[in-house]
Amino acid sequence: MSLDGPYNDQNIFAKIVRGEMPAVKLYEDRDVLAFMDVFPQARGHCLVVSKTSKARNLLEVEPDVLCTVMADVQRVARAVVAALNPDGVIITQFNGSAAGQTVFHLHVHIIPRWADQPMKGHSHGKMADLDELKVLAEQIAAQIT
Ligand code: 5GP
Image (cartoon, rainbow, N blue to C red):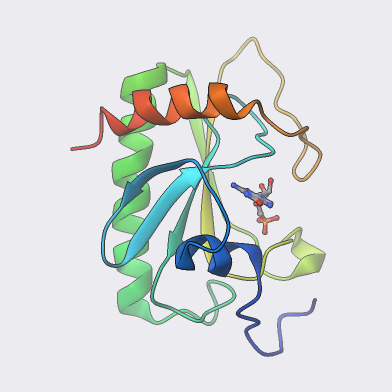
């Protein structure tokens, strides 16, 4: 999908936000939802999405919504570090399929990195064990302040 085009409210993240599809959630408020990536590139890979915007990507999103989302990205990333003690954290976000975007609802990736562990490729991860994701989500959620 190119950078241009309409927002499709049948995308998987819109369904998760509406509660029509399951997700292993770790944080939610009126504006933002954070949940575990079900095809993680690394242990603890999670996503932060806007619950209010119909933006498909960063270029479209309302600046105030972007500020809210990024403040919660920082909050969740701090919690990931506190819970999992990685050596580093990747914060990433893709705009358009040519850039690697596969779900067209604004979202930001938080991916912990350990120096001695290779990271799986974007969209190449195998589906995670849901029980393991739930444990990770509980550990991370417990560190959110
Ligand atoms: P994008 O490629 O758009 O930047 O990122 C989409 C992300 O959503 C990918 O990392 C992919 O693993 C993840 N993803 C795709 N489908 C689902 C799903 O049904 N549930 C969850 N939790 N994550 C998903």
